[in-house]
Length: 134
Image 1 (cartoon, rainbow, N blue to C red):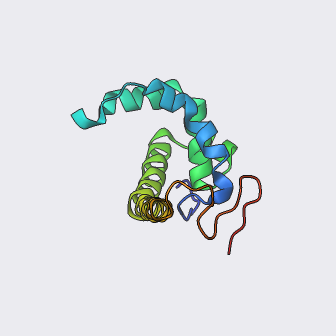
Image 2 (tube, rainbow, N blue to C red):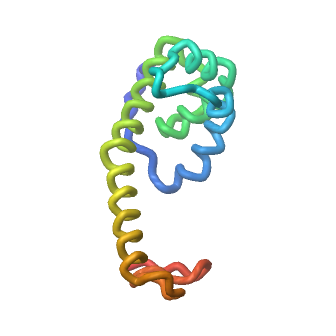
Image 3 (tube, helix red, strand yellow):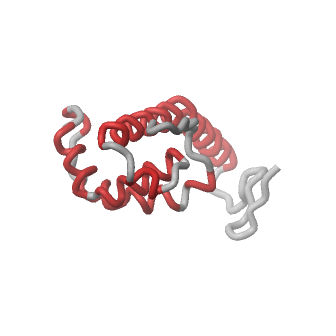
């Protein structure tokens, strides 16, 4: 786009604090959206435009592009970049993150259920504030 090649990759852990903050105003605009009834493209488009600063910030985070460069893009190039960055992250979220999260939560529930309601934590987990990982 605009003479620059971008390699779009899914968000990584270091993006997690900033990304939810960036999209919060967009999500607020979409409160009450009934996804079961189908995606209301006009409402999503309206939210992205009404919260243009948040949209720019979210795309900057997803694309790892500098915000001033994004602001100088032609509108059609910005739309293309936004759609592709969303596609990369939505696909990653749906095919990797949700299944992993569901599997791990099911394992945790099974472990807790097998142990009963005792106060001990499952192996590999520690008390709050003293997390360990292996």
